[in-house]
Image 1: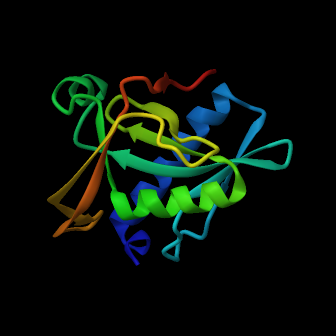
Image 2: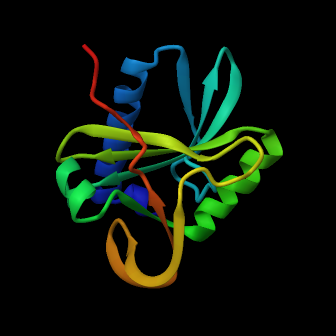
Amino acid sequence: MDILTPRGQASLADEQRAVDIFTSNFDKFSYIETPKNKPADIDAFLTKDNIIVACIETKCRYDCDLEKFQKQYENKWLVTFEKLEKARTIARSLCVKVVGFLYLKQSDVLLFQAIVDTNGNYVPNINISTTVTQATINGGKAERTNAYIDMKNATILKERQ
């Protein structure tokens, strides 16, 4: 599995950094991970008072800071459409949201927003396109259907001290 490689381990540490930023701002929530050594359909659950409130899709991006993400990438976050649809199915069955956590390492900021509401409807604008992208964190190329999620309304968080 990719998570067992050096790049995978670095990504796992950066995912924890994203969680730390979130929980420093919202201490009443807990981020409950799915097994990282298995290909789970979602990355985590978000809970409050021991109740699941959201399924989480978490990604770490290394190739841009916040300004580049906003300008060059036009606030669009690429997520494999199949993964997004799987998260949506799980969330709909639990009557919870899908929330996106996008950690931009260069800026050390977390962008988060609801992607799917509790009824299973997409919240932001999402463009679907088949493109060639990096296959995994360890490289390679894959042609697949991707979702480009509009993150212009995402909340931007920095760690609270």
